[in-house]
Image 1 (cartoon, rainbow, N blue to C red):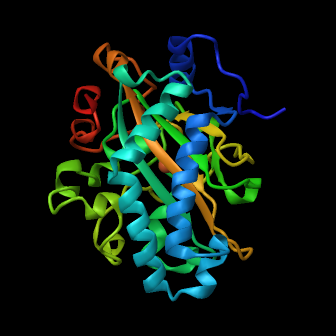
Image 2 (image 1 turned 180 degrees about the vertical axis):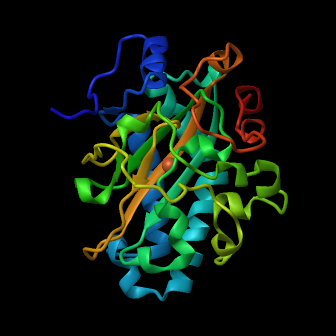
Length: 282
Ligand SMILES: [Fe+2]
């Protein structure tokens, strides 16, 4: 029996509360999630060709970064991707008229890239809340193809509501976006991660308790609180891994102060103002 739940509560409010309480859900693909995956796959095909998971064999590092960067920018900024993401959230109980979202980011976990210092922040164990997101944040994640457990990431459930020594105070949202959004989307400056400070754990005994991983099918929808402590797994078996993740905030819950425990987050500012809000979607 997996720790991750495969069925969601019938009510949207119950689902959100379960997420705030630390449950993680992996739900069947929906028409909307498959439509977003299909858009991402088409764009990826145009930039990276076939087979996409071996693109690192065909392009030098710099060119791969540029191509993936164009993909990331398109998926993060284009209205079509926003509409598909809103529909995907709606398909699992996050009504678009009540939900603000930080658009989808394409993640390319490139084979062998864990050795590259530029990519280091990708592999930091972290909570998404350390990036100045509110306690009501729910991360919605899907993969562009079926993935085995060693190709995804792991949660440390025992740390969900227990503090982890960290330096999240280094993260100041306003400073992060002050020179435009290239850093936020990660599409322009290849050396950005060498200069910017990203929150991570402080040296400690690394005893985070048991790690819970998962496998998934293309387009299945993983939902978890952004307060979950988790860590991306490096890829070293020849294939790069592609996924999409975005952040949802139920605005009513946020206004009521609902959300997950906030035990060790000291990041500054708030990303919520730059989310795509229901009024802006018209
Ligand atoms: Fe994360």
